[in-house]
Length: 146
Image: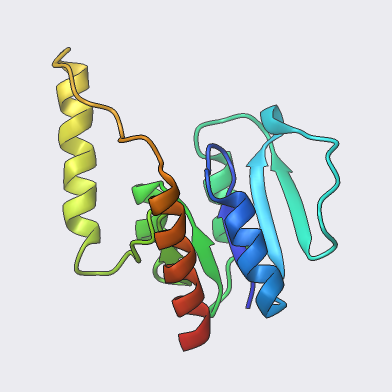
């Protein structure tokens, strides 16, 4: 088992790494070269950089995922594809399932259409400490039930 993080814009990298370290699970952080960093990462964390491009990280993640892995992503499209290979969890702690993914994709499409027609939509709510706690609890539960 590995935990993959869709790294561009993920607010839960630190929490994911802490939980993974506690359970001795390797982490693969996949991110755009635009987010290159010289910061040292723990030995159990591998950083994979991909070229610029809307779906470059998604394609790389899909090529690396194996059954039994966990993916952390807020991207509903990537989640819908990855569910066939791995368990996928949103940064809010919601586990993507066949029961909720269609609704999420439909909401994403409706939001895109509204923005396309210049209809103002609200952005996501600010990520809170409570959201972080919920994510850690959900990720821990996923790992313990695996």
